[in-house]
Image (cartoon, rainbow, N blue to C red; front, side, top):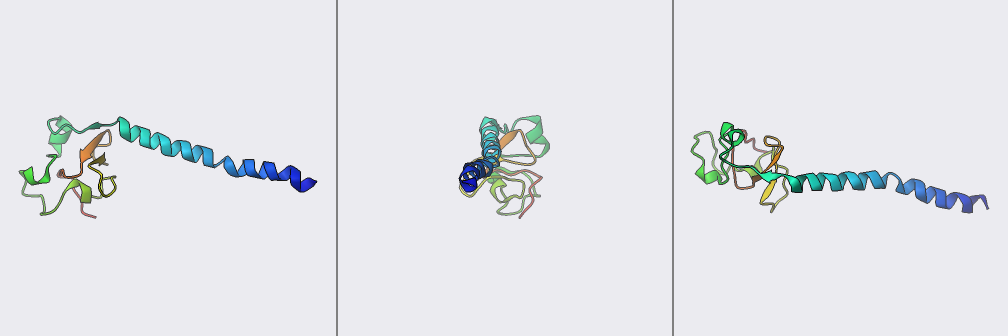
Length: 105
């Protein structure tokens, strides 16, 4: 009898931590989708000489093969065209882009 009473309570207790975790994951994705693409003509982008195509960078500091997708600041997964970046937290950057804050990983 005692075990039957506790079984539903145990199930409920196991589910409680899953609800906030699921909500956090959803809110993170929602915030990422709300971000706009970084405008290369914005002051913020110009401060870091951001370009959407790394090959168009007019900067001798760019190493061959360096682009946003292989930078440690880029939050995208393989195959993502646009993603969040530590340098431009309110915007999405192009995976093929580049800026002077590039750090290889």
